[in-house]
Image 1 (cartoon, rainbow, N blue to C red):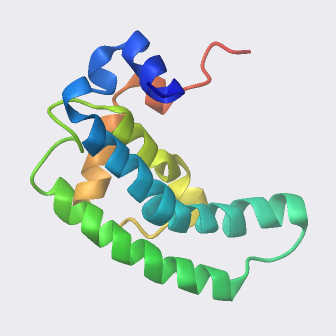
Image 2 (image 1 turned 135 degrees about the vertical axis):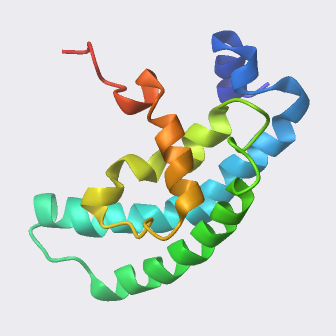
Image 3 (image 1 turned 90 degrees about the vertical axis):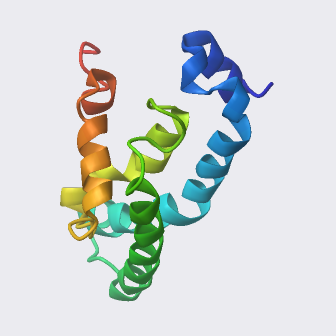
Length: 139
């Protein structure tokens, strides 16, 4: 059992359901190589570069990320049209991992507006205190 699987199982067995581990892992991998990767470019170019690197956003990198993001967001949006969560009937680690670029969508100029199922899914995640405000109480 991997470290994340074990941690999720200790926290809440339903967070990484034993009978759907392969499906959760598929979404984690898909996110890392596609959706979150494209979203990460928006985050880096539109938030990190101007704030910490004192350079404007790289237009070519953003154009490529825009094409990739819209492609993968379309796939995700279609999948979410028929379900509330990515795996099963409740949030799992897959939802948190795939949505990791979304809390910064507005500041990063992530083009999510046309993907109503993604927006609705992220709204559902935002009803979870730990997702909406993960650092509350750490001060």
